[in-house]
Image (cartoon, rainbow, N blue to C red):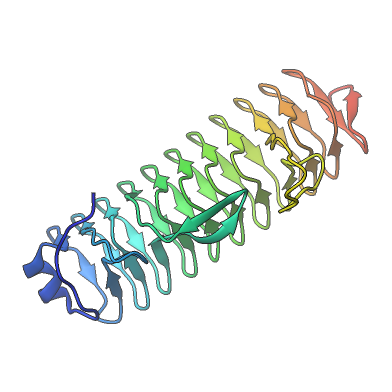
Length: 260
């Protein structure tokens, strides 16, 4: 729950410390040009906690509810814990903050934006200008390239690799050890309905099971499952489920002999 304290921004780190709205660990370094915003759009206050030996770069903005683990590196001009506002995916978001966790040893590169309610696992790296929307979960020991878009409530397991310039639609699941090449596109809407009051559409995101690999430039359509350890060739359009341990490629993708 938020903290019922009277607060008028901006406030210095020392003022926030005295108000209980900022907690800092041993040996952490916070740029004097970083900004800490404990209040969300509704005026609710949440403390920001920064772990031991964490580094917060110039121009970084940490919103209320952010928890930074030990040894985390937040580079310049990063936004963490941003409350969601406006209309999307059938909902209007009121700008409410939420707890946002950055695990021990994680790295966020310059320009990344992490929305409120997201959890990033230990030792995971997030590339330059990557966008992670609200309530997504990223596991440990993963690498996300630059200019990714990870929409709301996606779930990525441990040891996941996402190459640059890909888009994961809302609620997409990547299980442990998944590898996605560059420029992957995912779809969760078969009917392309948006704000049509007389029509409804069930959104069905794709699912990537443990250890599967998808080549660069592929498109994965709504409701598709890529099975465990399956391989999807580069540039494929996947319109049907892919069974475990199989190899598919083409447009539309079809089963093929494994490359030797």
